[in-house]
Length: 253
Length: 253
Image (cartoon, rainbow over all chains, first blue to last red; front, side, top):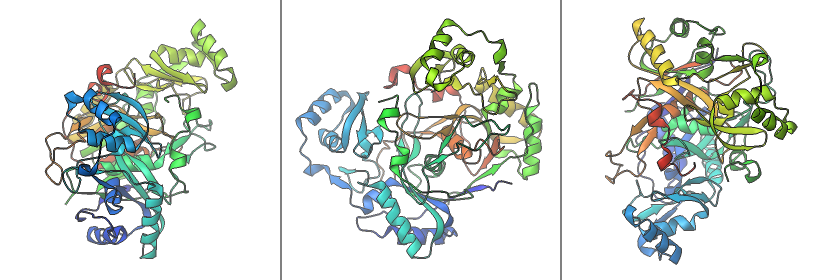
């Protein structure tokens, strides 16, 4: 019989500041919640990593480029700050779409999302923008390594999440933007369905599903930046290159 | 303190046939799993509804149109059956993209997905295609009503899921294609983040997140077509019109 899946919120984490010891914070939160990091996935909101890594930009230090000023004029009806747009452009490889006051950007990592993942809400001070980590997989691997060094045990996955919109569908869901100790996409090819026919549906985006599940407990105003997931077989390894679709097979570039 | 989220798989459901009593099947599965349908969400794979509703097409009865024959020729390298393509076209309002042997279609419901949601795997016999329900919200509402009439208690959500691909990202995730007794998209506008700033991220696609979470237990070969989710506040009501983005605000039409 397949086991239950249990998601335990890890509340009560303090506001994270640059240089903070994330492993210590999460181990303390786990102890408070009565869980142990072993045979499961620790799903953590991106902002925790970004703040610990100092990925913050004080908007008062930002000089908008002509392109940012032009976009701010174009989006005047939406009250966009040109300095904010400038920060978004610096994180952007390519603007995929623009409209309704929103820039859909491909980031330097290869994510396609609104405003290149730059966020002003929950920032540690007014007029501070929070950027995505430079290398989210490396950030996840570092936290995993430090957790294992201090008493956590494998199999252990660490998944970093952010909240993205989607084409065609309303509302936002959390997705994986970095991971360690787990295959982001599980290949089910070769396994057969109940009648023995070769499977048509072949690959499961496991870390994205974990992110969406944990997101149900991480609503922005709840103060829950991390969730511990148990009951799932933690398999494989990999990172963003497995999760981000290659341009040559993408029908939506 | 926020409660845990618990997902209990409901295994051991028999193969569903046209006319089967889904409420009875799910109530029996819940009893075997030791759960009670009250204050939670029952997440059920689309195929269960489609088969009970007889949404099956025997391909031997299908006469391909000239358009299906042309697409089969175009996709010759991928070994596509023209009758299968014909069934897909009948379910399609508009072909959004085509390539790599795949048709990305907008269905008559408004979903954008591969092959208009038509599936051959897990079909009850060879050369039978399984179509999506005609009105998935109505199917979910019917099951919910019958469960409540036979001992289940509100708050009770029913969510119907299917497995979709996504632009830009590898792998598939389960999404909601119909629901009852829950708001598919939760509006968080007006709630404030931890520092009192108005939220920028405003709407959560709750039923899609529930679908993705349950999908972790529903891998296609596991024989688990339904999952019971507890620990989430079941709020609001609504249906597909709330979840499917209006063309006027969609940057990806």
